[in-house]
Image (cartoon, rainbow, N blue to C red):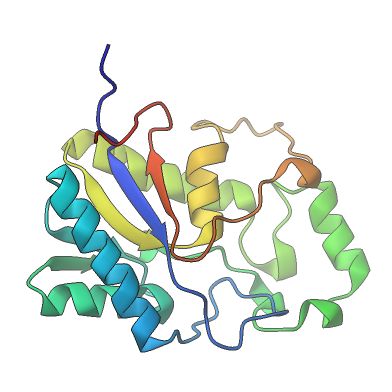
Length: 194
């Protein structure tokens, strides 16, 4: 049996400038223009190889939008969609991790799904947003290429579609974010055809 082609082709944005050691979720930070162009080139190559539409969805944060600007210059249709934004860490945003009180981080780790870190967005809320967007894409039935964020992509790939209110998730079980510029495909059972 031949696997179907993936529906969502998700790239994590290039590494942000000045983000090392800081809590960066919805904080809008820049990326190097050359890295944005390199990722846009990779996306074009993958689209050509797999016969994918010349359309891309990008997060409204500039680390994803910068890639979309290159694609648009090359004739692609680019849609900016707020539902692709990274998780909001509230008052933690932009702060060095070392400056966030350990007790606050421990409280989040103790209830990873439901606790809103820094008063921002809980992981369960992010997962609902992610899966609502994925359900819309599934209903459309056309492959989508997107530039998003590590937490967004992990929520798509690793959290169940329907999260019961009493579900729990151990912080140690949450996977590391994909590398910057990495491609992940969904649904997980589908593989890109060669």
